[in-house]
Length: 194
Image (cartoon, rainbow, N blue to C red; front, side, top):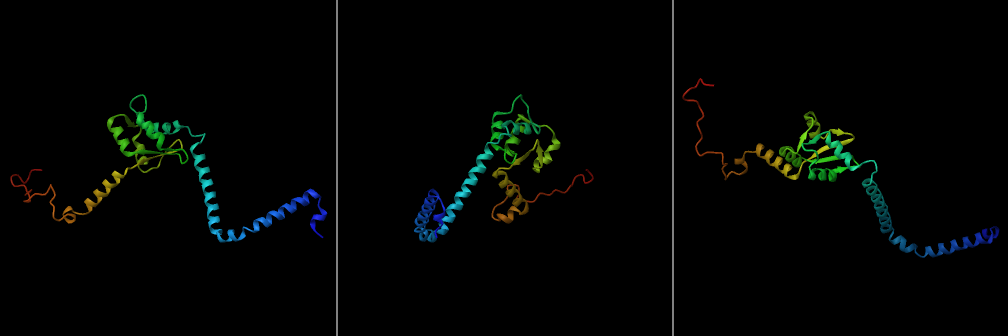
C-alpha cells in the first residue's frame, strides 16, 4: 500500500511533485558526476568570496574607532610645534592607521623630515626605544615606524661595503680616498706631544 493513501490530498500531491523533481534532477546526474571537481571548486570559491566580502566590509566601518583616535594616540608621542598638525601629516596618519589591528604606521623618512624642519617634536625621548622596537602602545594603538625600500637598500649597501673591502669587490678601480703613495703618519718633530 502506498504512503499516499494515508495522507490528505494536498500533502499527497506535494509528495508527487517531489518525485517529479527527483526524476528531473536525476537526468543531470551524469553531468554532475563528470564535473564534480569543478562544481566543488566553484562552490568553495563562492564561499571564500562571501567570507572576504564580510570581513573587509565589517573592518572598514567600525563604529568604535573614530578617525581622531589615531591622532590622539600619536599626540601623546609627537607634538606639533604650531597649534595644529601639519596638513600632510594628518592626511598621512589617516591613511596609515589600521582600525582593525589598531596599528598606526609612521614613515621614518617623514618623521625625520618633520622633526628636522621643526614642525614636529618628540614629547618624551624615553619613548624612542619602544618606538624603534615597535613595542610602543598608546591608548590601545600600537605605534610603529615604517622603513621605505630606499633605507633597506642603503643598509644593505652599507653592510656589504663594511664587510668587504672595495678593492676586493672592484679590484680594477681605486677608491677616491686612497693615495698613490702611503702617507707617513709617524711623529718626527715632537714625539712626546699628546
